Image (cartoon, rainbow, N blue to C red; front, side, top):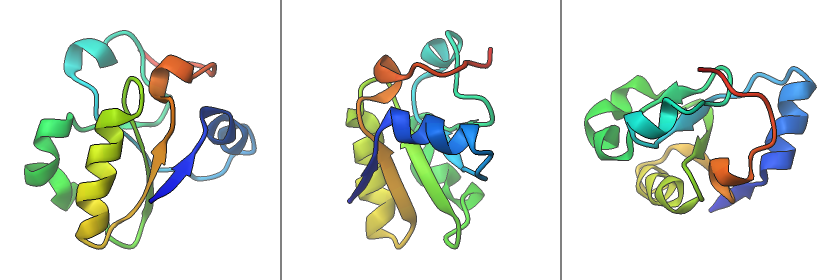
Length: 99
């Protein structure tokens, strides 16, 4: 499975790359801030909401520490999605947040 560091994500955002970030944390966690432009799909809703994701688009998955996003990536990778897990999750994020 592909991985990316929070620093690499921040560099790509700073370079205005078109990223598709999916935050799989729970509502109360996202209320404390989300990476600007990320979409929020809690991990438990991935199976029923994966139709919102395009199989031809690359996605970066994020959670608090990297475990839940790893689970989401494992699941979706097995279904043919192009997914990358952000290692360390939001606990390692030093970029801006959207509230």
